[in-house]
Amino acid sequence: MKKLGLGLIIALLVLIMVPVAQAVTQDVNISATVAQSLTFTVSDATIYFGTLGSGAAKYASTTEGGDTVAVPAHTMQAATNATGGYSIAVTGSTLTSGDDTITAIGATSVASSAGTEQFGVRLSSVSGGGTVATEYGTADEFAYLTTDQVASNATVTAADVYSATYIANIAALTEAGSYSTTLTYTATGSF
Image (tube, rainbow, N blue to C red; front, side):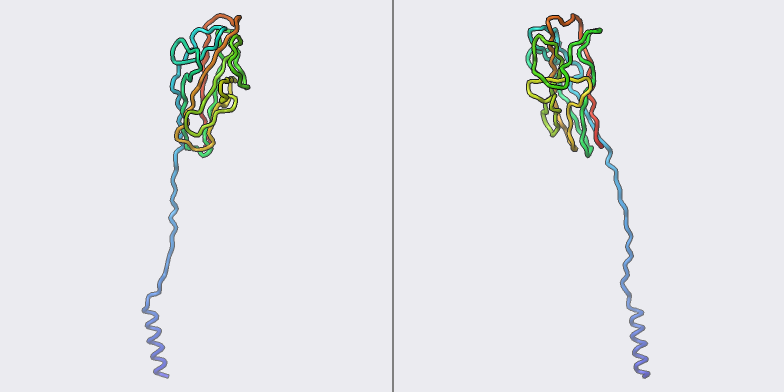
């Protein structure tokens, strides 16, 4: 028995002296913030129709005389890291001279009609993934409401570029005067 007892004691001593592996875990929580980003630019802040006549449409351009063919007057560029993308809205009155106005086309796009009062805009997507609102994106047609969404993109985008073409037509009896307006384009991110 003494032999068994001594062997048991030696076995116990060996077990006590043999290191037992242990593991202790600790979590590390890591966080970061990505700043919201939205950029929006308009290429030209002053555009002109020149002198209007009832016989033919005029299109705004960067030259003081305007243009007799439909040409883009300026471009707009939008970029955002917003998960829901962005929208672009326009606000502002139609062409006005004192109490006199040139009739805004409205929400339904129409073609140019010389001899009829018309003020409107048409947008085209030049590059990127942006979408022009249907009433503002119909080829050879124009629309204009004094407050309206004109373009959007439902996702993150590095650069969406749009061109804007403006039309003015007058009637034979449109009141004489110096007409002008200021349109404000606002890009809003969907963060």
